[in-house]
Length: 150
Length: 150
DNA sequence: TGCTATGTAGGAATCATTCCTGTCTAGATA
DNA sequence: TATCTAGACAGGAATGATTCCTACATAGCA
Image (tube, rainbow over all chains, first blue to last red; front, side):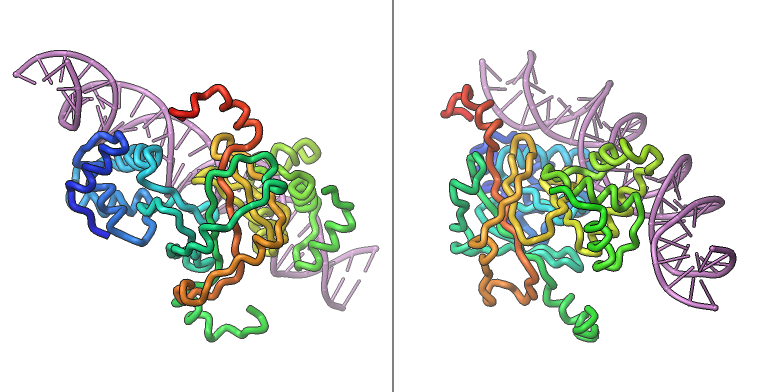
């Protein structure tokens, strides 16, 4: 999804986030991809247009946007932090081989609930379902592998 | 859950994991708690009995046990890796304030499925549901907070 | 237009995790 | 039981993502 600069400004103001060129660039890069980039991926994407941008600013901005609720952090295993510009409720397909993450929008999954009895006193705000498996290209790479020793 | 040394040995052999004192101690510590400790937590727990144990051995052993399927890694945000000795299918309640993780066993959640149409070519092996919210003690700490500005 | 809280750049510091290397040992074999 | 060797262990160094520090710059308000 590509956003007009005006739309970015509107969103920032709505969430009380100061508008700066750096932040707009970082947010635009994140919303413009579906690849769940790392902070360093974003740094590399953004420095093409803003060579002076500091890696530090990327981290700081991601922190600001996360606290403002404009950005979400996604994680697989204990790997490097990945970010997602899609903050509507959604779920993930995660490839256990290559680490690829795909978004899943599915109202049935949105409605998954936990019974009060099992919630151990938690006040639940939301949930997310993670599906783990092999993505299409990793499945193809595994065709050769013997199915009995896998 | 506390395990007899023999039971640990049986599990290790069943999973083709060499039996050493260090590994047994680490695994026992992990299975004996429900607190999802970090590698460093485990190091501190285990060095009480085994002062010579290296931090490196804890990491290495956790890697071995994870690959063998005896241990699972759990993560919240991009925080330090946490480990779980419970490898049966289960889900998690995660406190967004203090980071506490509680296991949830629930057959309804085990049966959550994704339609083929939405699976984007993934061969799904399993899934996990994460509920995010405030745990009981963090809720209590928040009683004072004004509900309209929280 | 000026003021000030906040953001930015860049470099240093932190710290979980991994790598390297020499020694040790589980467990298989004779 | 003694021997052998792949794999495990300890300890220290290296890595690398993230955070901290600080001086300078700027968004946005008055």
